Structure formats: C-alpha cells, structure tokens
Image (tube, rainbow, N blue to C red; front, side, top):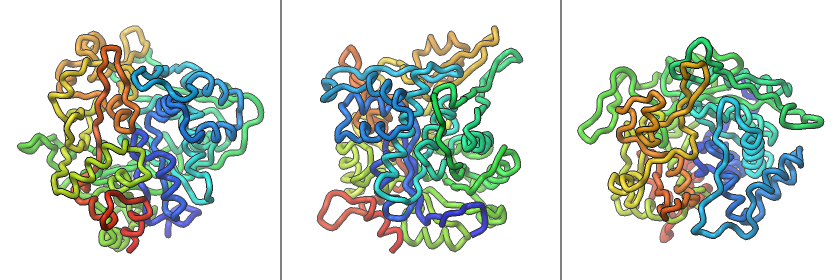
Length: 477
C-alpha cells in the first residue's frame, strides 16, 4: 500500500458517530476484532461530566482516571462532577462552562481528561489501533481535545465537516510537546480581532510531560478537489482520506453549486458531487469509501477501485455495543425490520448550515409539533458561530438560540428558520437528556445514514439485535 501508514490499513473503519454513539465500548469491540474502532470526540467533555453525575456506572471512568498522568487534574474533574450513586432522575444535570477563544481552565482540563478517558477505555484489553473523530466545524475545543487523545495513545485522528488543513501541524507540535496554535473561523472579523487559539501543555499540566506519538491524520472529504486541496494547503502530513458520500449519516457536505431541493425538501445531489476514485488513487495515499458501503459486495467494489476499505457508521450505530439509548435503537431496528424506516436529509435543521440526516421517529426533534413546544435555548454551545464585534472582541451566536438574542448579535432572521438545537438533542440520543425547570425534557434527534432501511439484515435469526462482531463478519463474508 502506497502512502505513509506504518501499520496495516484496516479494511473497515467504524464511523465516529457523535455525540457518544461511537463511545469507547463500541470502538473497543471493533478494534479487538482487528478493524479500526473510532470514538467520537464531539462534546465528549460534556458527556464525561454527565456520566460522572450519573454515578460512573461500572467504575470505568474512575479506572481510567487512575491512569491519567496528572493526578491533580483528574482529581479536580472527579470532585467537581461525580455524584455518588448518581443524581436523581428528575434533577437537571450540572452545567459545564462553554468553550471560547480564551477558555476557562476548568473546561480545558475537563476537555483534556475526557478525551484521554474515552481513548484509554477504547484501547483497554488489546494492542490494536484506535481512532477518534472530530468535526472541524466545532473548532474551539480542538487543541485540548487532540492533546488529551494523544496522551492516551490514539492512533488515528479523523476529521470531517470542514477543511482541516491546520490540523497536521498541530499533531506535529504536540508530538514534540510544543505549544500549538489554531486559527478559528470568525464571521465578520476585522483587523482588530484575534482569531487564533493557543494551547501550551505546560500551562495546564505541571511536571514531566510524557513522550507522545503522532497519530495518523485522515480528513473526511466529499470531492476530488478537496482531497487535492488538503495535500496542497495542509501544514503537515496527511496520511489518507475517507471519501464520504451524501447517503452517510450525520452532517453531509452540501451539494456543489447552487442548492436545489426536492419536492420533499431534501438537497439534490448531481454529477458534480460524484467522486472520481481514479483521481483519488493517483494521489498515492490510502483511502476509504463511506456512505452506503455496509455490505461485503460494496467492500469488494471499494477494493476493486483501489480503496483500502470502507467506513461504516449506521450498521454500528444500531448494534448492541452502541452508545445510543437502547429504547431508540430497538424502536428503529423494529421499524427497519417492518419496512417503515425513513431517513430525511434536513437542509436547515443544523445550526452549521450543513445538511443533516434525521431518522423519522415520533416524539423526537424531527417531529415539528414536538419541537415547537420547546423554548429556544442555547446552553451547551458547541455549534455556535464565532463572530467579530465592532470593538475587535469576539462574540458567539447560534441560530437555534432565542431569535431576539440572535438578532441582537447581528444574525439574520432567515438563518433562524427551521433550526434545531442539535447539542441538546444529541445528548438525549444517548440517554442524557436535560430536564428543564419547567419539567420539559429534551427530545432526541437520531441521525443515521440511508442504510437504516436495510440494517435489519444484520439481526440474528429469531433475535431482536446484533453485535459489532455480527456486522464485521457480514462485511468480511
């Protein structure tokens, strides 16, 4: 295999589905079987805080924290968020600080620790590679997140939903325990705006810093042009690509050119969105194909065009080791088996502006009537946009927050139409829904690929579920 990988490329990459669906238990199961298990880094700091408030069932976080190389930092996180026996079910979760260009020490420490814990647990009990997935759009946590994952020995970093040309240089700096800088996108930035974030490990971690290995970097892209751009513009080594089509779950790349919607309101993709795998192959790096490739036939097709293998998300999202709340997982599996499963590509739901795949399910954010009864609130802030103020300082706004607040920050009213609070909905997907003072409980918004309609094929005869091992066995058959 051409390229820079010094390890045998996996044939199957398990998709890094956020938030918390691709958790350590799923990634561990996949990696133990010789494929690449991937944890999601999306909002993992918040998820760790809520797991601790739920009592740390099984003591897994405590076990990982005992291996964190800086005990004082681990102790602060534990003491701040752990609730013995778990908080009462009707009580709200304690909030965590929001990320910003100049974040508080508390959120930086939580972010480092959370990424370490997730990767450490995924690596436990085997010697095979483990990856972590981030969204380029969620830029503010990047530096402490990546550093925390590297402290735990992560082998691969995957990143989509953007053009992450500055990440390779960050990996190089951290591998030498050096301070790293990352430029964030600032809407309406003027000359007085500071648009860079800086992370120096020695500012947060006292004492001798351990030796770190540079992970391989795989950007998740949707076109030949982006693959070539990554190689031309990146400030360090790119080790391969995941080529993701519009049938994949989560955020999709928007269609190239002017956006056109179908009669049902879904984005229409055309010939310009078709990837030429021959041109990708000519770049000389390993690549994996994602989006509708979860079958042994599609794996063979991918290998035939020169790919190293495939990335599979939806099939793993509904297996027994998935972090998705069991109730939702079983319901949608039954819908698939009955031939009723539907996925809608919502062009406007996500505050990012990217199309977002949504499984249609009653009593969820996907049901307009359910969502309209929710008071607009932005109290997690992962998908906020950073914008420049006239005085040169930075502000943060989200088109899913109360409309008058968003407008007061210079946002356009049309940007608020149809937007949904994905941050809170994704927490509900994994059984960590926030309870509001008025008794309202945040509702789920399950995201998955178009393959939802056919995932019942992985179910065991006479059974109502399947495992990660069942998926891998089927794909390699």
